[in-house]
Image (cartoon, rainbow, N blue to C red; front, side, top):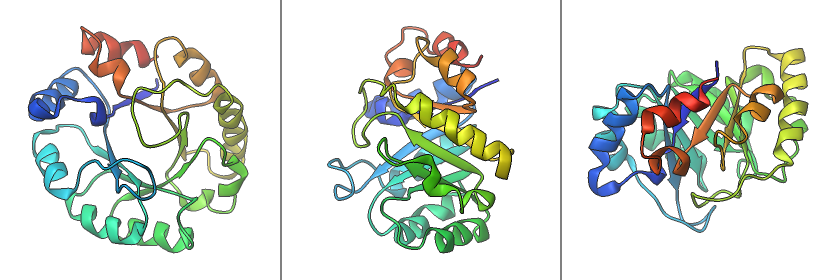
Length: 214
């Protein structure tokens, strides 16, 4: 069954504790946290003070997605919160293998993110050291964007590579996910989906989450 990681980027930040507790009670598998620095992407989101508050009220593990420059600095900021995953963009990191080792040494599962234009083959020689690869199916920086269809083919290619090199490495998709494309994602080999607007704008968040857990 596909795991669901609601992105709190689409939550009501005036009622963040309520929204985090609601998605956890509704059966989500992870709580996805988008960290943006205003440099790698043209948006600025939240830091460790806010995420610490999220961690205190979340009953599901955190999945922290770094969209930043200076990845190692941000890993040090968020590692004390003990998320399950920390993912970083390969496009920004000069020494990805070193950072993967650092994240794992901190007791956290390392993951790499690929922007829509980045081929899955870019992580071939890193795959054996990863626990997850996150494919962006929108351009990173803002919620509520439309799904980029070509990422389906990318997921299929990554799935074949993953099955050959490290079958237990998960494939995650982020952006424009809904009940309209979830079956295509499952068929492509996706294990985890990030959904923000689809879940938080739904009048029944439990039903929204369950519609993706196929």
